[in-house]
Length: 115
Length: 112
Image 1: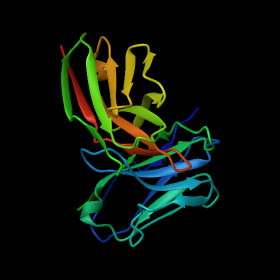
Image 2 (image 1 turned 180 degrees about the vertical axis):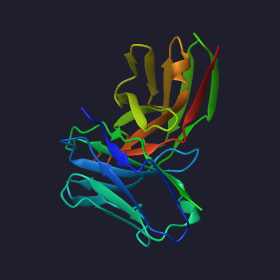
Image 3 (image 1 turned 180 degrees about the horizontal axis):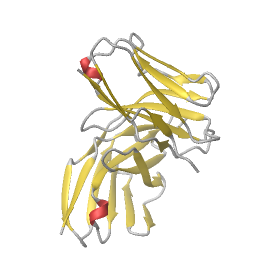
């Protein structure tokens, strides 16, 4: 079974440019998460989707970050414009969802460098 | 508030046991997790423990939970070079779904 797929794996851009990350969760997983992982830190939740609905986006900086999961399967996270402080690893995770949902599966991440 | 703390670095000799410690603050946590992250990779779930348990053993891994002190530990028996990685402790926050709060990670270095 394929795991969580993310692309690109690495991205280098100049500040003020836009950037987008893509995630395809494990087949059948209703819940999708985007996390931000700064160097030397643990992941921090940015947004969580239940199917196509964003049910927790309280930590997403909405002035420059946006996300979508239009058909409830794959998802895109966008930053526009990027700032130097956005350099980090962006992780996508998925889980089955539901009351007994207690395991999240992580993708390899996209490492963003903003110059 | 919600906070998970871990020591940043642990060095052990190959074949010895490793013990990685973690403290958390939310007494209503339902599950506590240990994830492993190798360089350039995502997080891999190693094991988890339900908050009403004291101990869980899974092959070389032993998780101990002291709910009174909000202390979690991961013991790796017979540590191998392939165990070198960053280990993250995480607690799930109640509130209708499994929101994870991660510690900063403990880097485990295994030397011959």
